[in-house]
Length: 248
Length: 270
Image (cartoon, rainbow over all chains, first blue to last red):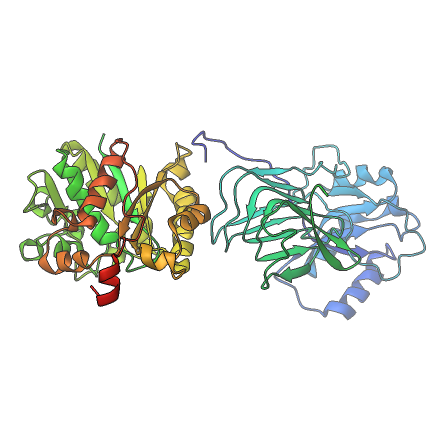
C-alpha cells in the first residue's frame, strides 16, 4: 500500500520439511542404505531435509563434512540439525545449518515418526549463533473495510477481527477466532488449521457457510429467529457445530 | 485537476452507457467542460446513445497508439458545447488498451482544461473494466434492483477498493456512489423487486439517485439523444437530480413510490 521503499519485509513463514533420522554415523553403511533406497542415480531436484541426530549415541562425532556431500548426491539437501541437546548447535553453525532443539527427548520412540514437528529457519546464516526457532505470538489481523463478494481474507496463525460487513460471496478465514462487528453474509472459516477451540462471533448472523476446524455447515434453510440477524457465536461441541445467540 | 469518474456495474445491460451519456451531459449542461470516454473496445455503444456514430473518424485506440491526436478524436456533442465524446474502437479488442496509454490520454485531457472525465466501463471484470476504473477518483455503481446485479456491484466495489490506482498507492479511497436504475416502485410493492432500502442495506454505499424504469430510455437510445434531454420525463428529472447531488446540491430522492392509480383508471384500464 505505502509507496515508501523498503528493501525487505520480515514475515512469518513455516516450512514443511522431511526429517532424516540417522541410526548410524558410518558413511559407508549410509551410502549402501541410500543406494538401496534411492538407487544409483543422481537426483537433480533436491528436497530440504532436517537431520535428526537423536538416534545416534555420539552425535558430536558425526562426520558432517563427509556426509553432507554424500546426501546431496541423492538429492537430500540438509538445511538443519535437530537434537535434544543444545551442544549440537555449534556443530550446526560450523556447517552453516540451522539448529532445532527437539522439544521432548524422544529417545526410544524414534522408530517411524518421520513427521516434522519443529519449523526450521529456512535460510541458515552460518555466522549467526544458531538458535532454536522462537515462537512468535500470533498476530491478530484487523480489517476495517467491507469484505466484498469475491474477496478473501486469511488471518494466518492468528485471530481475525473485521469491523465492516462480510458480503455474500466473500470469504474470511482464520487459524484462530473470527470476530465480525457487522453483518456476516458470506463464509467464515475459523480454526482453519484444525484448532477445535476456535470460535466465530458476529454482530448479525446471516452467513452462507460457517466452519470450525473443518467441520462446516452450509446454511440453506432460514436460520431460527433466535439468531437470524442477531449477535451470534458459533463453536464446536464435540464434532457438532453450535450456533447460539450472544448475551443470553 | 480534472476529476475522473467511472461508471461501472460488473453486470451488463443495467444502464451504464445510458447513465454515462446522461450524467456527462448533465455536467456539461451545468457549465462544466466534460469528456466522456467509451472503454468498451470492440463493442462501442456510447457513440450511438450520444448520436454521433456517423462522426467517428478516430477513436481511443488511435490516440493511445499515437495514430491520431486527442483533438482529432474528440467529438463535440450536438447538444452541449462543452461536452466531448471519445469513442471506443469497433474493430480492435481490449488488449489494445494499456495502463500507460490510458494515463497519457487522461493527463492530456487534464491539460486541455477538462473539469470532469467520465469513463464508461464495459461489463465484466476483465481488462477493459479494470482499466476504466483504475484511474478513477469517484465511481458511480449502476445497479438494478435484483440480486445478481447487486452481487456483481458488490464484486466491483471490492475491486475498486483493492485494484484502483488510489488503492495501490494507499491514497484516499475512490469515492463510491450507488445509482439504482430501472426501478419500478409498483413491482417493489408487489414484492417482485428489491427495494431501495434492500439494495442500500446489502451494498452499504451512499445513494446518489434512483432512476425509474421508463419507456423514455429506449426512445432516447433509438433517437441518439441522452435521456436527460427528454425534458418533462421522470428519467430526465431523475438524472438531473443525480448530477445536482454529485456537484454537492441537496436534493430529496424522488420517484420512489408507485404513482397513485385512480379508481376509474383501475376499473377501466389506463
